[in-house]
Image (cartoon, rainbow, N blue to C red; front, side, top):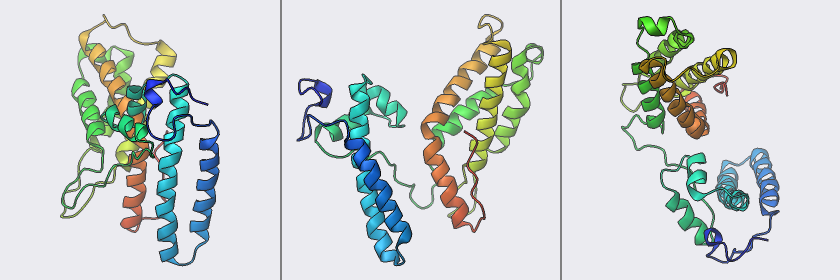
Length: 240
């Protein structure tokens, strides 16, 4: 049971929340998803899936309570969930209700599918990756081709009503991060004092990794929907 004198968990009628709520709701969610899969009538599926959203929001609430019990702060939880302001989560939690973290899809005529921050981080890395002599003589220079490939997947669709598929960019970023991990495994982290460009590149890589970790699930969902909406075949997830 949670302590009622914990200021991060006060409010609403669920102050002392049992630790097994998350597990119960996850099982209920799985059952409801199976019912929606088995339903033949789209009207029935509509109602069931709306209920799944509500159950997922309640499960998110109790998972957050579990994380708070482990000592996670609200800013840390907000960052993990890709929420700009932790106060929004706190207000929902302290009101005693579910945590709704899903972001609305952009209105018609916009190109953003929730990937603006990720594209900005990728752009910063690309701008730092100039082919200087110092970089060519550094192991970090081995990332140059992967970063160039990433940049080629950063263009937006320009047709009316079109939404950019973030899938190719996700895959290209995953490859950049994979190669960066391989470099650190082989050579360790570079000496920050070696030359300013290298320090800037690895700082940009850190920002890119944080944005990718925060937004990947949302953007994979947008990728799946985009592929299905355009009549695509198999939907491939970006490498994690």
